[in-house]
Image 1 (cartoon, rainbow, N blue to C red):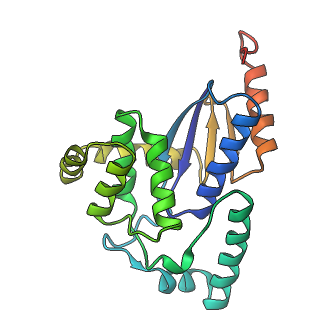
Image 2: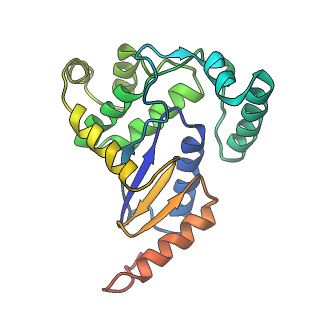
Length: 217
């Protein structure tokens, strides 16, 4: 089964959605029968390349410090339930994520895309690292097993730029307005970080609808 996950690295619900998705496919026995591809979807496409002060950005977006803190508290509670320790106080800047998405495309070519997604989410949300910085991206790539020099050369080039733009445009063409957004076998979509049982039900529905019948697990 092919699954495309549209997400943005700075989206905390995308990190939570990843955990819930993984729990669903593991408990339902689909872990070895699903091919996942991560697709880019920038929540802040006009973000300056150097990023912005995170608190300033979020307080302007949500209407003040109290609203920001309330959202962070709710996310922290949801994260704990799914095994994620959000450390919002460590995050100084909201980055531009285009280069991170381009690196995700590079990792896909080396069959390490899911590892990189995990590495980027953890680096940003749990360690407060600046994933908009080139050196940080190189370091994270090396940590998940990608070649450091090859990664640095890739980021210094323009490889993948047009592909990432085209993939993001395809997401908008699907009518996606928020992430995470899961597309199963090009036929069934799930929006949001849904509970694992919702993912399981969707997987079973898509499998049952296959012309050749169910696939043994």
